[in-house]
Image 1 (spheres, rainbow, N blue to C red):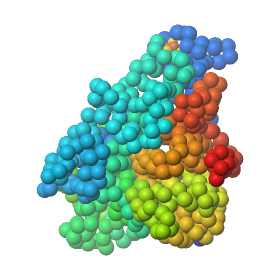
Image 2 (image 1 turned 120 degrees about the vertical axis):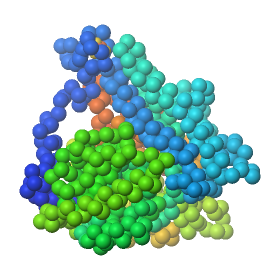
Image 3 (image 1 turned 60 degrees about the horizontal axis):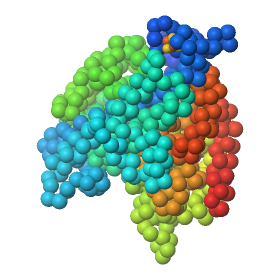
Image 4 (image 1 turned 45 degrees about the vertical axis):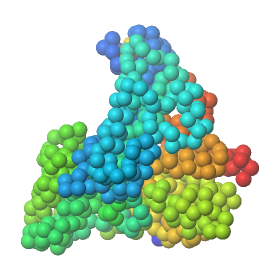
Length: 626
Ligand code: BF8
Ligand code: SF4
């Protein structure tokens, strides 16, 4: 039985009652204070990039003081938004490169998937024969770091795309050069007195997005696999009920697995468990929020306490000894909120420093001692709990996660006909699609956003799509919504169409496949590329679309740009602040087809959004004659 959004909300209501007792604030109240939002901001027509402004475009004032029109202003804002996202994902990737560079046989980090490292090294033309695995790791990590600032050439991983996509990128000057260059070039173009031509601004948005998806994020994913292992199917659980009242609860939140992996490692050590017992707890439970949760769920089966808009709920349980964060998507609200409880809010990265937190600086060189200190701090905080405030909602679902591309290929060997099909390739998957057993695939990604009833769009869309024999690949907070609802339980096959149900049975998979965190959307690009290569088509011809129904962050816009940039139509449930410009809206929803054969659709009505995706998938099938 699936858990409903109503049940999530009832649990939240109960937690907010606890919050009321201690005077806690919550996003539900702040949203009210911020509504209605500023119209100019919503439409993207406010410019404050120079101090002659701010200028806002209206009927009466169609141009800013410098003469820039609404299309230039909306386009520049969109480009800056994208650059913010691209910088953020890519900097995460850079940190992982540094962690790989620090890896050693006897240090804090080891190489857990040497085969993958060797594969990447060969792909990059590095001599691997007879080389010590750590020498190779350092060489490849350094090459990865050069991808951020190299003066010449384009991103190495672009070669993984089908030839046709690479040609489009070359022809339209969209192939991303050094990652940092694309971010800085975007900021340069969006400076006062530079670009205001809509086409130029959107093209650069796509290029900056591609430098993320095929550059920074892809390195983040690939090197995380090298360091921490390539995900394989593993069982876990999701929702707040994974926290255990008798145990010390440590919640990891953020994005970089370098921190969360280490915390998990120490929390699981006999020494720390014994210490927790000594302090009156039965044991230690680590659970996660947001993408770092996806990372450790995919590799270790660590349970997922919740997604983005549930981060405050974790503290509101009164049973969270420490919420340990690194970077991105962390509410500054956690500082004051944790002060209402006994919870320690531990920040660890110079990139994300916040008031009312305890800062334990984490880095690759001292990761072990810092992780130990964090776990100890949490254990020692157990005694400070206020029992009258403790309430953990007993909601949770089982989930099977860990579907990297490598894992999907392996599972699908289960549906392959060993007489005709090549094993160990995407061919069986393609065969399912061509024969119509599966109608297509949707990449469901992105956040929660209070503009949309949290999780409802993710869950309703997934239910509709799987009932129509469309398999879902999910990541980020979308994946967690699915897991909380029960859609990643293999038994969810029973609410699928007959074709998908059959595939789930043969391959022993759930109908919604957890592909990881948001940087792991790069995995989706690889899967789509492999399918297109195998089918001998362009990516854009595949019956595959992307969807971010509840997105909120700059990173999500960067992702959107690289997903359409890779030839995959993308459906959004929230407008990226572009409704103020008919020209920018037209380019994003249609004009980009000329360059990359894909575009955005923005539709706020969930039902229509689902219908539009199904219609697009069927159109693509018809065009292929399948
Ligand atoms: O990178 S889905 S709320 S957690 S931005 Fe953030 Fe959005 Fe969640 Fe991960 Ni992605
Ligand atoms: Fe106004 Fe132009 Fe300055 Fe923007 S760049 S704030 S539109 S004068």
